[in-house]
Amino acid sequence: MTSQPDLIFDPQLIRRFDINGPRYTSYPTADRFVEAFDASALKDWLAKRAVGGVSRPLSLYFHIPFCNTICYYCACNKIITKDHGRSAKYLNYLDKEIQMQADALGGTRQVTQLHLGGGTPTFLSHEEMHQLMASVRKHFNLVPNGEYSIEVDPRKVDFDTVEMLANLGFNRMSVGVQDFAEDVQIATNRVQSVEETKLVMDAARATGFKSISMDLIYGLPKQNVISFNRTLEQVLELSPDRISLYSYAHLPGLFKPQRRIIPIDLPSADAKLQILQLAIRRLTEAGYVYIGMDHFAKPEDELTIAQRQGRLHRNFQGYSTQAECDLLAFGVSAIGKIGPVYSQNVKTLDEYYDALDRDELPVLRGVELTADDLLRRSIIQALMCHFELSIESIEIAHLIKFGEYFASELDDLRAMEEAGLVKIDDEWISVLPAGRLLVRGIAMVFDRYLRSDRERARYSRVI
Image (cartoon, rainbow, N blue to C red; front, top):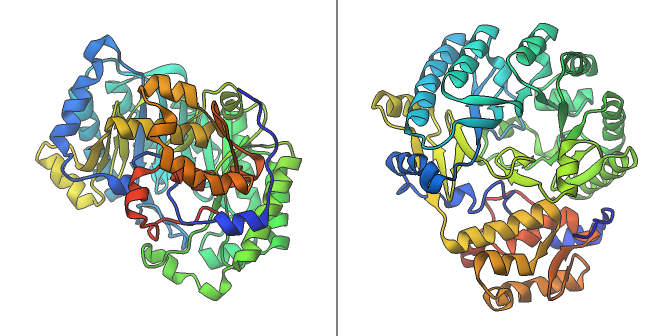
């Protein structure tokens, strides 16, 4: 594979090709899952893992939906509460779901990756965190030196909590920041100092965490180029290993908390582009490598190394170095992947508790991938992770003639090729430096579901 050139930021191309589209943490995307795929279907596939003697290692995801306070920009499935009686009850049901999935599981129980997301996983008390991890270890074997990560809210975490997490086996941390500017923090109801953030990151380094990721958002109310430049200076001083730079999608019709954001406070489309351009320049000048979509990492980070070696993968937690795992998901709204199927849990606590009270896995919907889905998933993965696609490797793996199978898609790519976003020849489709920021739009060309309905309003914009 060829080494990738630098990223090119071209505002005119971005304005032309900035459309609404999925983030492709899965293909088909979760909105294509069907309720005909139910608890019994998931149970069958869990049992099938060992068929043929091949059993992939496991990745585990736990959704902890509770938060102490509401961040107005948030689009996650969360529950705002200060009542630990609610989390205590949730953990008891989570323990039951863990046991039920483990009992249904065929093949190995070797876990190489684990992630706690939310909500705010650090809402859990020390005792509750010990309880959860004891339940996990009772049913699964967490291998030494696996990737065990947790999302952390620095406003609620001290050194003792970080040390406790390290002692439980966590070795990677994602720290929510979004923006350090005070007026932006007030407008989004997330007030968090640089000092609080530094304390948590220093504690993580002191207790042996291997990687610290930081989340930032551009396009928030009251944000501008000058204020975000100051935030970037503070971020670079803190020197996280990875940075996720997300675009804020203002969708108050879908996400109630966003109704508290005053639209006039949001930066204009041009101002938002300028903020993004500034962030890319500052981060790349500081030595961060653009991994793709909204992710940056230091050159020595495992994510960067995996991309360089062609091992990078994309799943529901974003970019990952763990390509060949089956993903078991636990808790409300969590999405898992077993072989050629995806499944998603019910989205409310009442539905979750009701299903488990009936001794049923709390599955809302899912999908079993067709041969066409698997083919298109491998193409979208390659483009999103490596910015290039070997046509021959796809033909060999899926027994197709690429030019015939994707004649319409290749025609649709011609406009992008003429604009300098992609290069197409007989052997490769390569995303060029000017197309890397727009890789979602390029991947969308291969999305059969979008090609058939063209309904994109429910997705956020690419940039």
